[in-house]
Image 1 (spheres, rainbow over the protein chains, first blue to last red):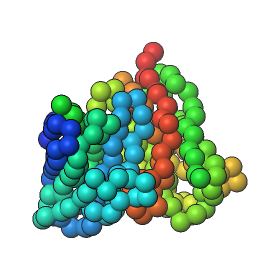
Image 2 (spheres, helix red, strand yellow; image 1 turned 180 degrees about the vertical axis):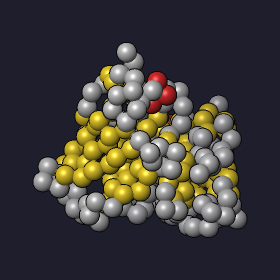
Image 3 (spheres, rainbow over the protein chains, first blue to last red; image 1 turned 90 degrees about the horizontal axis):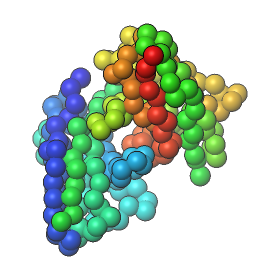
Image 4 (cartoon, rainbow over the protein chains, first blue to last red; image 1 turned 60 degrees about the vertical axis):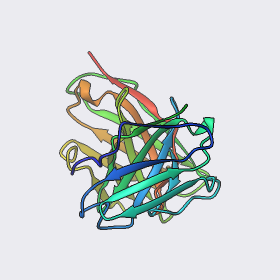
Length: 108
Length: 117
């Protein structure tokens, strides 16, 4: 079971949009709609931002959105704010869970 | 609301067994959720260790399966992790989390475990 592939870094200026990709295989990302995204600030526990590809838990701003095409899922953060600067991890579940390597999002 | 709290030794000797417990408060461990362990080595990403349902059903990361045991104690409303034959590579922050089928939506604060003699 290999880790999902994410770019190590992404950046954008306040107010802009940024998209983070997460590539897996037809056995995980592409085969099931069980992709979730987590935000992690330094020294803190991860926080669920997106589940089942595109659904937002209560309390997560609608600036955060998710999508999937084939074996690649994406997280888009619109209207970037300073507090969005964090590490983001994708995850897929297909009998067992796998995480992506993480993407450090920098707000310029 | 449900809260999770990890506890256990912060230092484990090489070749020993790492043992952690996650106490569930504000809800029942017998609810329709899976209960997971996730770890994060210093400066690295998240790694899923495994999960358990209150019935005792488990799923483990294939790369750790031979060394991992996750168990549940419904009387104490907690679940536990045992990782055997530890090495320095097992040094990490260990998190417990709830997975209600909509992703891991509740996390403990994490506990740091160092493997060193």
